[in-house]
Image (cartoon, rainbow, N blue to C red):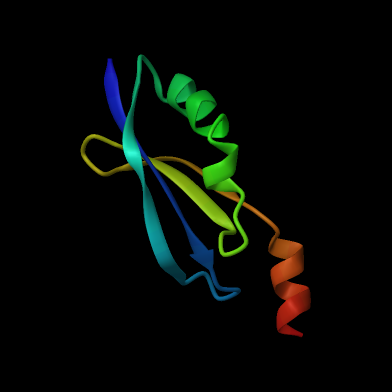
Length: 79
């Protein structure tokens, strides 16, 4: 079993990630794909007004999955 952490934040159009938040629980899964499925079940955490990026890290802090949300809306809002 592996240990994963779910994070979310705000990604600026230039790629800078701000307002980083980590989910208050650890995801235990046999594979990164299983952890990703569990993360996607965290809809209330992933979809928030101040969030357009979510990602999973493994026990060593390495990125194993990321999801960018609403990039088109970010570009439109900045114009």
